[in-house]
Length: 250
Ligand code: G
Ligand code: G
Ligand code: MN
Ligand code: NA
Image (cartoon, rainbow, N blue to C red; front, side, top):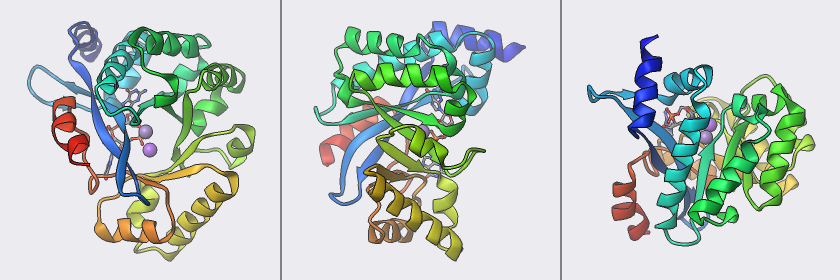
């Protein structure tokens, strides 16, 4: 396929770069870190979304090279941020069935000189179910070194709540589909409330994704949600923009 050849070239030429979206402490109203989101700006100037090229990279055997490159770059960028800010980085399910992943990630952190406690990895429920034994080995390698783990897209997927008792996450990210509908749907409001209570009970921080409206932000703050993310709080932006504006203005 054509995209595969283009992708190979794009990786070689460093055309796929991380953008950064702020993660905001909803109680203190301040940025606590950024989620890296891969962006490929093709030669024609169009953006090809990660939902298209990440699966191709996985099938073409390019995901290790792409991830190493993106993570190295993101860690280097994070070194220029104020010291307490965290870098959050996504891992796709297939990556967690590679038992060397944890060690490779730690090698990159070591090379760049970014302390492990400043890094958080976002994984999904399906990633852990796919190959539970290997996923645990990988996550344990990382957690033992001080890296934090967030359960991404929580509430979607096929798994039950069993992952929460099987693994000790540092953070749960409520999928943006809940935030998008909770004002118009009383049941969703109850669901979000329950997830926030669950987080408090488990001692796990809760992040709400996809906050686009002031009213959504207000409601989440009223419910005691810990962290927020969404276009209202900041869109994913290239490193030049976040260092110039967002961090300095906080
Ligand atoms: O940025 P956007 O909303 O288009 O991201 C779409 C999906 O791609 C999300 O599920 C996100 O987690 C995933 N994604 C973004 N960047 C990366 C990355 O660097 N690696 C992996 N594995 N997934 C990513
Ligand atoms: O699956 P994951 O949570 O990693 O994906 C995050 C995706 O959500 C990114 O592609 C990002 O661009 C997107 N995103 C972030 N904030 C918003 C928002 O407020 N609204 C919508 N629709 N998408 C968002
Ligand atoms: Mn994510
Ligand atoms: Na998500």
